[in-house]
Image (cartoon, rainbow over all chains, first blue to last red):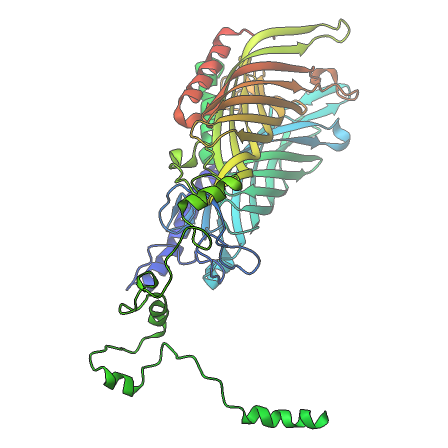
Length: 272
Length: 319
């Protein structure tokens, strides 16, 4: 649980340490913006690429009326130095904070120990991501690597013992995972594919009717819509307990108000 | 024939070179400068040469002022505003080719026909008529009056746009959504699905139609002695299991601010033969009518919390 809080803080410190040498090396002209922001060699204006050859937009090109934003048109919102560090990840972030909540439904598969039952969980995730190639080549690259930690609470597990059903009240799990992220294009709110692999530690109901904390494998595949939402398929593979979940993930900036308003209603309603 | 081909290179070699266009970057010949000692002809760098090509020299007479150039007359090839109006009317074009659009409202945090991609947090407060299947043997069902509060995150991508001039207007947008549903007795569901919004106009308060569909599933509820959701509380609220049901609704509203919504939800039963009796759950659901809107302008969030509180205080669920 502490890792969820510590990792975002660590990511901020790490990125600050990465950003400092960049600013120091150009002491005579300190960059006010993200120097990695430049798109691939292109004649197109910033933020507008057309076709496979990144030529400029045609004269007839149309656009939505954009809300005024400072800095480059490519610069992600809610970021430091035009995307050098983003609080909400986007296509042109060199480093990003990953903070999200998600809800999911799936199946808990316990083999011969009982029937496979629906399994729902609520997850809180934190971490950070970096663009290694972008940092090395000092130009845009769609590949990002991240480290996340998450905590989830889900519906309880069961085990059939003779004719009796043994249940747990809840299933708690903590995970740490390496995120392999590929951004599919480089305009704001681009889609991205996230493949994560890591370890999960969670309680599994044993034959002695006690909960045993076990280590297992955690695998996840997500389709992300900018930094605001993702559709997620994840699996926790533990000994005689496999949990496959399909869910919706949203950034903490949107998810925390949702959770907070719900908790407020429960508390003021006398339920919580 | 062969002889003519053989003589071709000689002809090419002997032909005088074509006259070259004067290079704007080159300095004028010395004779020209001497002819007019007042002329200032600095050597132009490459960047300035292009500007010099576009800007007419100050001593060149404009074509309109030249008496030898015929004056414009009505009719082809001289067109005026009246001709353009006729042309626009012929092809059903607007009178103004590019009306200056109004400014975007609230930086697109509230959906607007002028916005492309939007991220919204929606709150629904609704009256709900809930139902739950009773014993299969007696074929009865329990119904009761309740309320529904729902908080969803929507990410909307423009799918159909209308273009006027160079401005795009959002006509139909759709995207993923998910969130939490709450009702009486601490019942909590989560939902994962799709939302769609169609704007019928371009104004800030253009009417819109919203349609959502989602998988809905229980995530919390009354669990006696459950020690809270996270195992450290003194409440009977905790995780509750259910199969996947679904929820759908349709809303009509104005400008992305809010909608009047009617919808329903169905909770699938968990009643497989191999599932022990104590783990089974009956079919259930609700119809609901209410108001949904973006929480950023306050009223929808306040209404949803109030609805949730009233459901918790006034509706007494049967256990």
